[in-house]
Image 1 (cartoon, rainbow, N blue to C red):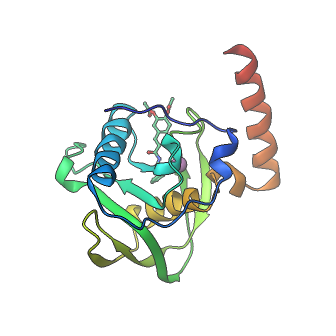
Image 2: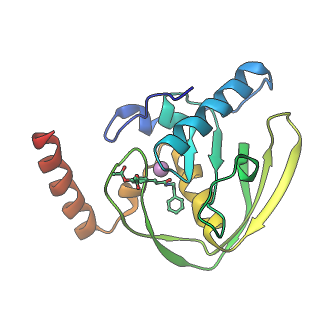
Length: 170
Ligand SMILES: CC(=O)Oc1ccc(/C=C/C(=O)NCCc2ccccc2)cc1OC(C)=O
Ligand SMILES: [Co+2]
């Protein structure tokens, strides 16, 4: 089912999420709910803290060449750890917890990541494209960091001004 998305500057987004210890039906239900929630909001990535669960869980679903997001293309990462990183890249990021705001964020170009799947099986993935950016963005959420906190001083000032104005209106 679709869950409510936690919106910036909710202080839950600053929590450091805890490692997952049990790989049971409740975990599978959460992963399925995260998928429903991400797709319904037109997202390509979501961390569990964005639906209020402070566990080290993230999902990514990159649209395919026909711009379709297929369920089987969903990458589910539990307790992910970056074991290699290199290079630098910049990409205009957005976040379902900061709806309607996009800005350039600097990231590592290449990452190699170890993680567990929904059954507790270990996997290693490496990427130097869109997926590398998405993984870094979502892993930041697991450590209580939102992309707007990585902006340069001036960009951050611009964001805060815009966001305050938006809060007054809504
Ligand atoms: C108004 C509003 O909510 O705008 C949106 C903002 C962000 C998003 C989705 C952001 C998202 O999935 N971010 C995952 C992290 C990520 C960012 C950049 C590259 C890879 C991975 C969707 C929005 O809704 C629409 C209709 O576009
Ligand atoms: Co995000």
